Image (cartoon, rainbow, N blue to C red):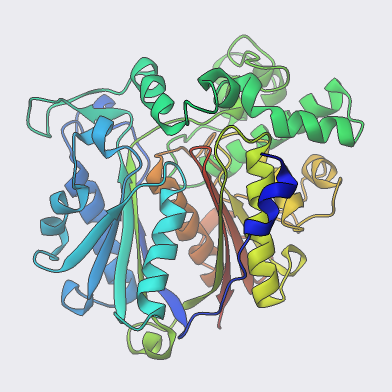
Length: 435
């Protein structure tokens, strides 16, 4: 099906019937629990409960104040052997007996978690909703043993499961998920903008360096070493030398290993409430202005590009705001080049200029157009469903001025988050700092 034939399917968003705000956030560090003797045997309930309790404390609420919770996990079947994952976590944070449901939208699950909870509040059904996600792709459960007995989630197991996210009547796995397949949008951009192979290599290297610096300064990051640190450990002089060494081989026409996700375990949670009662609980609510959403299956060429355009168009038309009005941009970049590609589509940076902004460090933590201030999926880490919640956690902390060493240098009134996952869902969310 061509792009023009499905364009008419893009809906016009309507405003929430009442305002919705984020009043609390919580997150575990991203980690590889099976490799840590102190953490080996920790379960999904403990991780989700940790994040949920932190989010409630941050919001100034207790479980008694929360009306309902939304649970997200991208791969509950293969990582946990769960059929109804929300039933396995409620006891860990005082929500036994309250209503809940589970949703799974691959690596977009964390972004959809916000959308699902916001709609429950905007409808007027509930006043306070907790939403969160957990994922343990590194340390998966054993089918016939208790949850504390974990095994490694190997690449072989992961890629077998990945096949189930791709419509097999439309596409082969190699077309959509292998390195050569995920480079489709990048290759299109390279040709449209007349970039040389050397240009592409430089910009991808610069992205990796800046992401490594941001992640190394973030206490929740799976990776605590920057590429400069890794270079020194290997007896090299610069991060660039390390990123062009045998430790970082090319796995596509352009992409090297450092520009693909690093998987780990973790959880995140948010507490949302009706905006008109937010100040009853906290003095730092972050309002959700709009959430756009588009889905395209893997048989669609450059699906990430086109779905991003559609989700962005929805929020742009509803709010009258563009990416140029934003002060921070967060994006799911388990293919790292998605940073500047999605930022351009969402008009956060000028068309055809994203790669230059990246080379000039304008999209770094210290730049005027910061992107992925937590380091992103390729260095900070990727825990599937939980990653999108971690991006909201980072955005909220930045908007409050609580991001520590990675705090950007300018005030943040508006932030945009572009979610993407599983070759299917793309969301675009605009947050507003009311202070």
